[in-house]
Length: 92
Image (cartoon, rainbow, N blue to C red; front, side, top):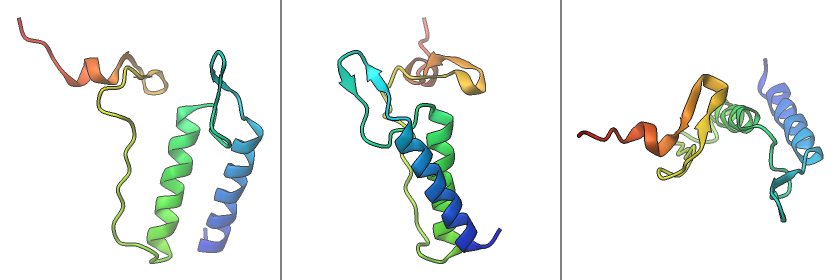
């Protein structure tokens, strides 16, 4: 895939994201263009990083996947527990 078609693919992902502006929490709307599924968000972000490297627009990237104290689970990859609980093993 060439760089221009990769950029167009990312633009299409963003357009699809904007069409899915859904509720995150009762009474609180999601930010404009927020993707419904974490996996979709992750793919979009890594696609943009990949194109930036391929086009030599950057040589350094920082990508914060989530806050370190988040209770978010990653059921998409088979991790039903929250990030914080899994990353801190309590010893008795």
